[in-house]
Image (cartoon, rainbow, N blue to C red; front, side, top):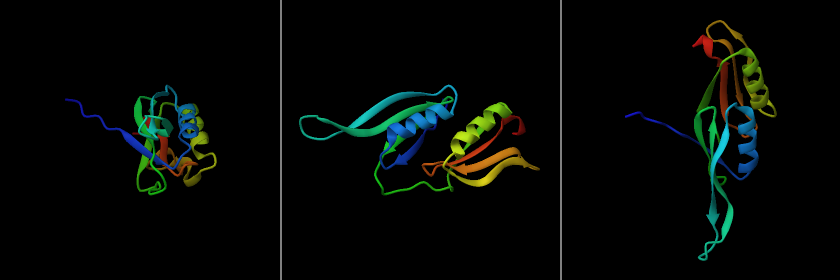
Length: 132
């Protein structure tokens, strides 16, 4: 049996904005599903609760969980890009309005690599896949 893992990104609102941001950052990405809060006993639909995204073949769940938690660079996502053009595009998007932890450059042991916290605080390590 093949084991599959999914990632959950915890937000305090802004789910639609974040889903658009991530979908436009990664090739072959799409919104798979959305769920909403139920606001009363009559089943009235409320704010977005979750958006499920497929980002370059990986499933991510964006959760409108409130302000109880915030992202930490202790958990980061690694993006292995197929070529330098893709690497530069992904880096530019993720690092825009974010915080650079390690600049995108050539590192002796890593090859072309960069590490950033994006505008939502989530941590991404971006590298060329050929250097794995």
